[in-house]
Length: 78
Image (cartoon, rainbow, N blue to C red; front, top):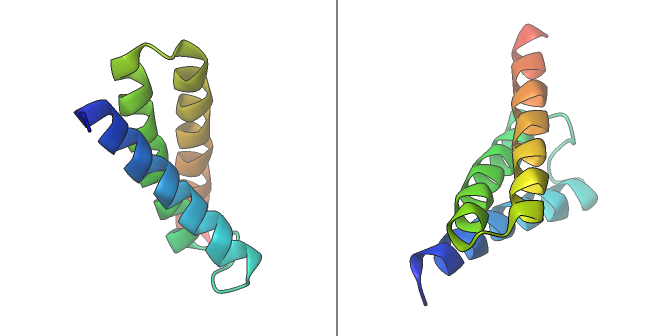
């Protein structure tokens, strides 16, 4: 398995972990853990998508990452 696939796999696994934890009410959808998992996953998935030239997924993951950053920053204001 190459680096891009490892990054993509790790990234989407973190995003899915956040979704799972929020869906089963283990963490809040507005918690720092939730945003942190989405942020880390988005960054890894962005890098992996960039490496293979999957531009629609680069756009998706950059957007995902930006939303996670905004959410995380907002969580520090409360």
